[in-house]
Length: 313
Image (cartoon, rainbow, N blue to C red):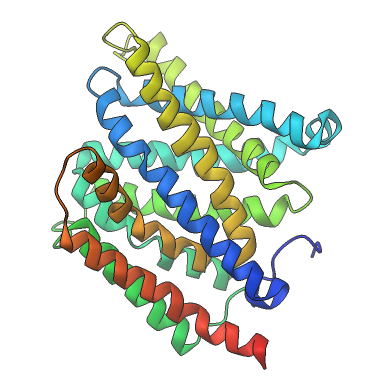
């Protein structure tokens, strides 16, 4: 294992309390940046077909990250990276996962998808256990239960009524996102977080751009239905650059410090961050989302207590 990669069994032991603190801070910042994309996407979806919006998001994000990667690590690091493997991993996880999420929402509704997404920590934990990087203990299990329960509360959902294609697509999307994040950190430990993010999101771009071009070629309605003005460009920049590129870089860095299981707990605080953003835009306070976020945060703390104690000992 590379000295720069986390120890997935005991991620806290690898870098101490400072590494854990920075990993959690990156998780919070990543999810807040990701939450910024929801109000922007709501505006864009009024005139953008979802497939066009996802493809444009990937394209802008990858373009910005390529420039940043060249500036940070230099052309040699970019040229010598394993682009084939990165494209394959990114396409089959982030690319396909994004498409499945879109499919799930079209077959069900946003609330159902949000409820199912709260189970991402379970998928992430199973992935770490499968890879030999996670041994369960009481503190971690309690933390995971709190994270999932808090996430469900934060969405305001009461449950998923039927198990259909939409639900299965949402479950697949959550699993693929967690798997892609795990592989990105595991297989590209020689790259910086910017490099890891770029090489896999490029695969997501290839996947969705291919679907977009095929849909366009067969005559599907995939182009924006209105003139792209300054306001839409601003919203697209927020959705692609802040909620896409920046959020993903911080997310991958968080996974590198905490492991995918613990880092994924932060996903369930996203509804609370969205509520804060909407509060700033004039909406009201929502105690349900606030209470749910508090439970998730408690879960993050509980899950890491046992690992912190092992390091201290």
